[in-house]
Length: 361
Length: 188
Image 1 (cartoon, each protein chain N blue to C red):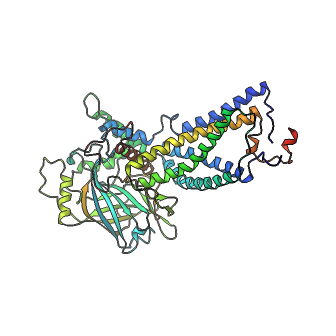
Image 2 (cartoon, rainbow over the protein chains, first blue to last red):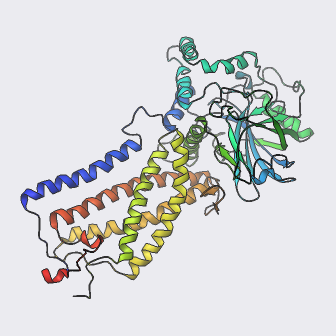
Image 3 (cartoon, one colour):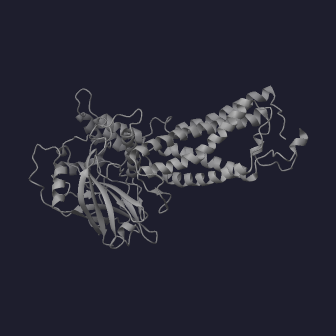
């Protein structure tokens, strides 16, 4: 049936065992390298999320950034004007697409006062009728401080509180800005920005560039922003001492009626940078109005429908693609790590921190 | 003499080597994509999902081939413990190559993600949306990937042990037939 064994001679045996050992060791070492265990300097998603936790602490059950937020629901009404540039079903004329969104403020602390930062964020998940999804996370500023994940990580490191004072070291932050002149546009914006009294009166920018793809397969680099209909100064009802005035303001406005934004899509000219979120495109670029976002109700993030959504900006439908912006894959990878950590806490998996009572839901 | 084959069927051998390449590539893609924030994360993930479904489909075909055509017997003089190890590791490999894609698919379903295999090709969810299930399945996916990689290493080492040390025809049973069709049993 089979060969009776004709074993190797002793001399050959040694070389055979050596060969077997090498055949196991080489893929094992390659695997460990690719997996990052032998590449300690590689920036991994876990390192980025660890740094958020070093800076602000671990708030189990919460997102590791933009931890404080509120769920919103509504829909997007397309007017069809973006259809010439993108085959995404969400842009078909007259198409209404349900939206689950989330307003938030940046930072890892879910109890931070709303006035602690001038930035507000809007994240949206469009559930297209064909089952595809479009997820986007936008911020209320036109430019991002840095252009690369490495610079972002360096910024987080510079902001880590000094154990002696419990506050970030101003010298380290100054050194970071000095080493990163690309932050100038953001800093100029931040200098004049004031924490707004309402989520509803803010514009929200995609920051990163994307590409719209039309029926002929042509790629048009774009950026988008949500421009609010509301333009008042904000409700006067907010007591200055209230740390949570944004959610209260939103509830109050929505009780009066839906809040609306226009989706403005800016089309890049050839040569406009798509890989640098620190640079705006010139003002004269063509902008199309793609439709109206209508938000109808808000709910607590502890029990609302946005809780279990990871607003990964690379969850895109056919007709919208990522650009070459290096921040996009980094956001996607880091958000996935944050999502795994908070859902693991939610699941009470061994080795995870117990979710805080209000946070756990 | 012809009643028991000394080689796997051509279909089994073709599936073995094709899937060996796919599964090892898949393990490297998977471990690499979660360990970087670079653009590799994005394009490796885009390969990972359709490749996983392709492995799932091939594994089903392969299981059918295996059940229809029993493999050549192991050498009669192989120690019982080694025979047991061979049997157990082969079924572990079958289990993992079927389970891994299903867990990945279920995990994305539980996380509420659309399961996209390409620009517009979407698979239906196979698990209800649940953050708790997502976390459990995601950890299982990673743990089983490590187990699969270790089983692959052991499998490859054992195959080389048979081919280089014992020289008992076990490795040859998965290799292409030699050009001159020699009846091995005559040489015995």
